[in-house]
Amino acid sequence: MNIFKRLFRIGTAEAHSALDKLEDPIKMTEQGIRELKENLEKSLVALAEVKALAIRSRNDHETYSEKAADYERKAMLLLKNGQNGTMEAGEADRLAAECLVKKQENTKHASDALGDKEKFENSVTQLDGNIKGLKKKISHYENELRTLKARVKVASATKDINKQMSSMDSGGTVAMLERMKEKVAQEEALAESYGDIATESRSLDQEIEQAIGDEGRISANEELEKMKERLGINTDNSSSNA
Image (cartoon, rainbow, N blue to C red; front, side):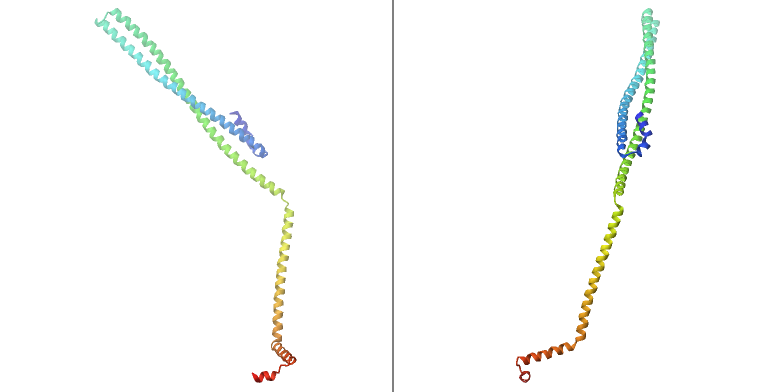
């Protein structure tokens, strides 16, 4: 029992100590609970044995009391037989005296059995109280153990997260993100610039075509006539044959 007094007296301090040290209180608590359960099993066995003794003492008290009453009844019958002449008075007195001796012996045994019965019943009451106390303590310490294990898990997870966060180069990470943002913005601007250039090129071609219009087709017809002349093709004959 002292192990639990020491354990839970320092429980608060241990909870705030290094996590590696928390493993020892958990193992100590588990060992303490195992010992309490072993004591509980022994107490249950002892309780059953003492109850059996109490039951036996009660039965002995009843048996001896009945025997004492029976010997008293027999002594009375013997005295009556001696008085009415059924048997010799001296022999009746002798046998009646023996019956009374037996009655006294059984009365003494009945009294002793009654004392044992009361003593064993008191032990049963005490053991039953101890067992209830053990069960209550086991339940309490098991709840404490579950809470302690949960706190260890939470503390361990929190420690790992905080450790990772503290080891991160927040300044370098922010600078890297800013560089990435700048590069993305530059790429987006460059893409938009190429789009504008392509649009401007298409608009320029359209303006040129619109400005030339029919003049471009007239120039092409004149060049065709000149080419026919160089080849000696008579444009008039072509026209008349047509």
